Image (cartoon, rainbow, N blue to C red; front, top):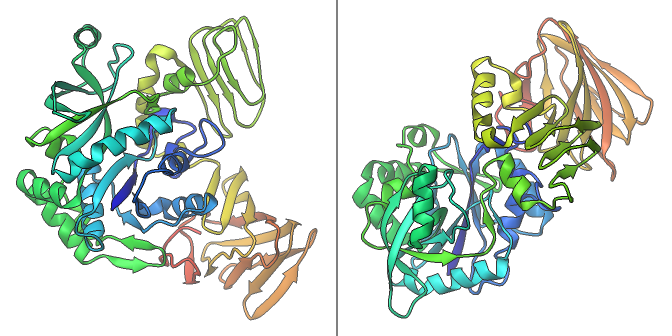
Length: 475
């Protein structure tokens, strides 16, 4: 049985300010109406003899991943939660162990959740061609046929054809080259971009990882053995997994094994690793510009202009990537988009929330958005999905005023339970147990005014939660 393994643990910091730790690029609809994660899952439709996918994601994204799968009518076999990212080798190892518990002959198709592939049919043909090789204990990777000298990708050197297959033997993996070296690779016709997509037997991968990275395999076995089921999720044992060495499949296995083969793939692949990548694959006007949202431009060429919340106007500029969000604006030259990651590092070093959160923050019950804030008060717009419910909680340092602006709210306040409708309000004193629920069929929206000496999201004492979150979890 072919088991897709979707790796959704990345952050995508080079696509800041749209991609952030709490809502990374794989969860965004960057091209088209589906998110990158949803596209990764739906492009598998048509592959024969496949099981439900195994998802591996950061535990902070678990509800978002589950909701995005539900929105496309897909049920995962398991959603495996990483307490901390440890790169692709451990993530794939815990998926392999999980797959083997159900199918000792499981084939894993390992796919990052944040890639774009324009021609899904060609991709499925390559996967189908790789299945007999994987069954014969080869470790198959998919090498992208390059169309330019690219310094942002690693390369695979492959030359000798494997008889009666579409694959080539891997001679070596090479790191990201300089421009001259990349051009030499292209001219030789013997190099392919390293896509980070793999196909192999779960048992064979574990055997190879046991040989070349036994510490990783030991930690993964223990973290799976002590994993706990949490609603739709499989939660790895946290302390063991946190101590697992961090490494990629390439470094841990593929560069060491003698069983690596590559299938060339020419299917319009893009890893969307920077804003310039989105500019390249998006529809451009006669001046080479990509415009999204409320954008006005004059004498502008070869730019990516994206407005998420307000009017963006550009005049007399070239080769710029300009991205506007509710709380941040990025302006970067096309040749320096890889350095966006350095801005994110500065934000983290200064403990700024823009590295992690958008102004609108998603929760399993809906979302909240900061509207205004000062030293002793802040205002939020809270949206609760139909049937959604915040936890039963109290605060030690703040009181709250709630005004319903849309929908119907069921309020628990101390020993009282009552209904509020539009234009009605209530006051939640400091220290009083309370809960907000949406009993209706339409989204509930309220305006919340918080006031107090401390307004951090960690000022919550949680008593009950329908989503099984920890008592110290935010909202």
